[in-house]
Amino acid sequence: MTALHGRHLAVSPDWLALYYRDPLELTHGEGRHVWDADGNRYLDFFGGILTTMTAHALPEVTKAVAEQAGRIIHSSTLYLNRPMVELAERVATLSGIPDARVFFTTSGTEANDTALLLATTYRRSNQILAMRNSYHGRSFSAVSVTGNRAWSPTSLSPLQTLYVHGGVRTRGPYAELSDHRFVKACVADLEDLLGHTRDAAALIAEPVQGVGGFTSPPDGLYAAFRQVLDRHGILWISDEVQTGWGRTGDHFWGWQAHAEHGPPDILTFAKGIGNGMSIGGVVARAEVMNCLDANSISTFGGSPVTMAAGLANLSYLLEHDLPGNARRVGGLLIERLRAVVAGSACVREVRGRGLMIGIELVKPGTDEANPETAAAVLEAARERGLLLGKGGGHSTSVLRIAPPLSLTVAEAEEGAAILGEALRAAE
Ligand code: PMP
Image 1 (cartoon, rainbow, N blue to C red):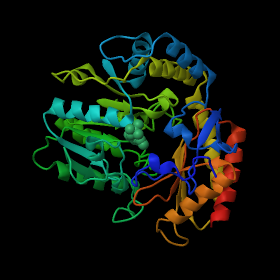
Image 2: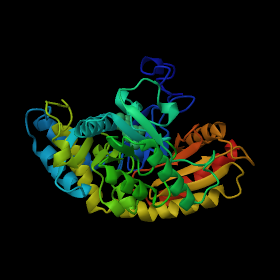
Image 3: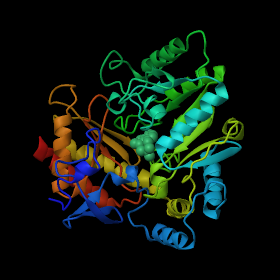
C-alpha cells in the first residue's frame, strides 16, 4: 500500500485510468529498474516507450540537465540556445528528410497537432486520412484522427477525418485474407475513400500501432498507400512517437520498414528522446515547414534544459549502439517470451520488432479479446517485480513490452521468466 493510497483522486479524473488496483508511486530509478514508495524494486518492461529511451537516471543525462539548469532555464521562444540548435541539426540529419527543418514542442500530442496544422495549411484542406485503431494524442485535433475508439472521447471534430483499413485485422471481414489480398483490399478502400475529389491534406499513420497493441501493417501496405497518395500530392505524416530512435531494432525510424517511396513528408517524435524530460517535435522539408504565414510559438518547446537532456540522451544512444541492442536483445526476448507462453490457451500471438513486443490475449479456445486476464497478468507481474504495459484495439487485451533500449540479456531472461509465472498465476 503506497503512502499516497486513496489520494489519487486529486490528479485523476474519471477518464484517466491509472494502472493497478493500488496505483504505483514511483520514487526512483536506475538502469532498467524502478522503485516504489514501499521500497519494492521492479524490472521496468514498459517505461522505455513512455519516457525512458536509454536507461533510468542515466548519469550522462542527469549531468547535462543539472549543468544546464545551473546556467539558464528559459524558453526557446524568441531566443536561441545551443543545445536546441545542435539537437535540431542532428535530428534533421537523422530524419532522412531532404532539406529538413525541425520544430520542437513539449509532447507528442503537440507535435501531431503541429503536423496537422502544417499539412492542412499546405494543402488548403482539412480532410485527413487516418488509420483505424490509431492513437495520435489527446488534443482536439489529435483525438480527431485517433481511430482507437477507447481513446477518442468526442465525436466532434475540427477535421474531416476518413479512416482507412490496414491496422488490426484479427476480427471482421479482413481476418481471413492473406497479406497480399489484405493489402489489395486496403488500397481499394483508400481509393474509394478518396473518391472523386482527392483533395485530402495528408495521411497520418504510426509505422507500428502503439496504443493499439503493437500491430504492424503487412509488408507492402504503406508502400502501396504511398503510391496512391503521391499521385495526388497528399502528404504522408509518420507518427514516430513510439517507433523512433531505433525502438524497432532493424530501423532507426519506423518508416524505414516501408521505405520504397522515400521518407515521409512530415515526421513527428516525442516520448523517449528526452529520457523523461518533455520533448516533442516535428520534422518536415522546408517548403512544408514554412507554409504557415502567421506566427506560431511553443513557449517551452526547445527549452534549454530539455534540449540538453535530449542531446545527451541521443549521444548515448548512438555511441552505445542501442538500436543494435534493441535488435539483438529484442530478438532474444521475443524467443524467450514465445517459449514461456507456449501452451497457454489465452495467448493468441506474441509479435513485435526490436524492443516493441506485444502479447495478445484471448478467451481460451476463442478469438475473443481477454482484457480481464490482461489486467490480472499486469497485477501478478507487479507482485513478482515486473512492470508491463497494456493496450489493444477494441479492448485492452494486449500486454505491451517496451523496456529501456539498454536492456541486458540477463534482464530479458529474468523478465520473460516472471511474465510466464504471472500468466500462469492469472489464468
Ligand atoms: N502518438 C503516438 C503514436 C503515441 O503513442 C502517443 C502517446 N501514447 C502520442 C502520439 C501522444 O504523445 P503525448 O502523450 O506525449 O502527447
